[in-house]
Image 1 (cartoon, one colour):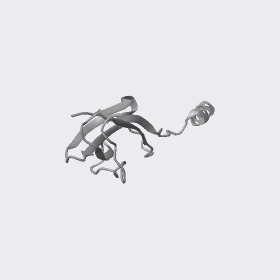
Image 2: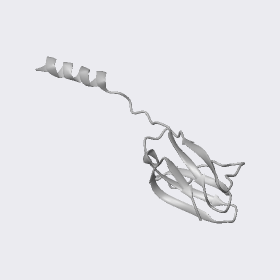
Image 3: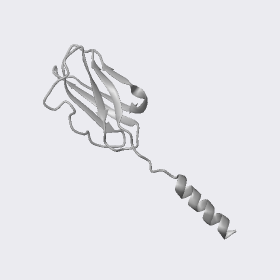
Image 4: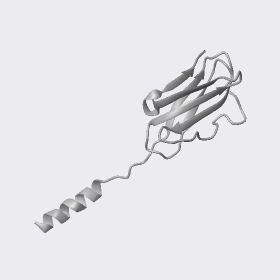
Amino acid sequence: MRKYLAVAAVLICAFATPVVAEDLEFLLVNNSSSALTGFYVSAASSEHWEENLLEGSILASNYEVTVVIADGLSTCIYDIRGVFQDGDVVEDLALDLCELGEYTFTD
């Protein structure tokens, strides 16, 4: 009996693969009438926003950019925050970025 348990344990270890977080990628589209000056993405479980992904640049109205989230986390659920040149702030919570594909800001 012990021999079979040992063989089973070896087989389980041989086929076990580490969980590797994949980068998340989606298209960010600004279809609003104001330039996007700040874009923040944080895991929904976090209490704080991560750094501004547009730091030092803007996403003008009617432009788009590919966003890659390579934070090493194994979650798909994130919160996003957009800050606009006209002072508006938009937050969208608990988005599934693994399924998103595209996120569009509008007026």
